[in-house]
Image 1 (cartoon, each protein chain N blue to C red):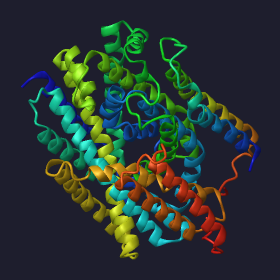
Image 2: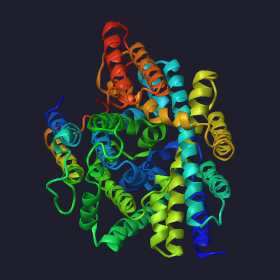
Image 3: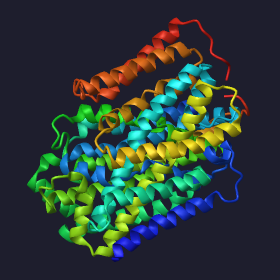
Image 4: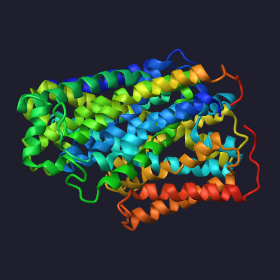
Length: 474
Length: 73
């Protein structure tokens, strides 16, 4: 057994043990399982949110984009800052509503605010349809990282299988506490890996960031300004994508739901202030992608730029460390996706849609069964039908972003009506599906999801102003 | 809307102005600052100023908004 292998599997098993241990002394009811009893302080919220936001995409996708597309990848640094700014104003209000009515999930919020179970079930279904491909992406990324990092010694399928079964074990036992504690390991390892490589490679090959950029500017200046190497991603595309992803960020059911686990609204406000510091590791990831562009031209798969450059530059134990960091980086978001996916299914599809009288114990038991169902589904897709969900992934972010008008207007505007939100949401979703599948993305140089969101917001406003219905007081 | 929230919202608009709507005007390489192409330098500058902006917004809300009106929003 080589060193890299040992490091990778050791980390996966250790993380899972920490996750299982995290929930040991807590009596598991729905409140503790999904929102950690609403007791998380500033540090753990910060780590948890970073844990779910910085996924395998941070490792592979962002550096891959820097490598193959150039400047459009800058959007990855920016959109977080926009999302945190919005969260400063939105999440504390959301938390107050959640606390007052004991909400656990995003559809809970829609049901409470708009008094419409139909809307709740719709939101839950859109959430699940977006979660499954996102989950599969984490698994595929994990398999890729481990396979490359172990020099093909570990098959990607084996890595996916083992790490995901362990992930589900700690979701099953500990709920969100498990994810929060494993986040600590993940964040430390990921930041260490990114700092070593991101500062290291430009220095080793060029003697620093500045000299690396000098070389890049001399060779291909167009790579560093919009649209880089992707003609369809010019400035307007970047701007519309930023607005879409900035607004959509906290609309992911799992990110939205974790806001409820904070101890107070003030914690979320202060968290918004410190979140942008997490953009620094992303910058370092881009540096690796740009360095790879110069040092390793002609890679077939740009997403492998990060790992290939590490392999070329460092000894195998460091590659193992990066692989291990990559694996936990997939496990944490995967765990939270599974957790909220299963709660959506049991609480918001089964209970809200079919059996409103189901007791909380029943919902809790069913949620745990759903963990196994979602795990199996994601494994089947990841191992047997890896290409099947690619199209769904394209609409995932665009889809969940369509919740934004309903959430923000529901919190801040008395006149918004449930009919308005349902009409807007359906318009937005229909446009997303139509534009993406008819290959009209980008549309007029803009991200199609943004066009859909604009239409959605407009419809929501107009229908709300026209309808006389009063929504339940909150 | 309480005065503190209004001022905070004005501050909150800054990242959107600088990091989205200003992009067409800063999309260039020269001048290179601290080794970074100008566009990237501009982005980093405002991303790293965002915590400062939000911190000021936080203090302003605290100072100008009436102390916590429990249970109402």
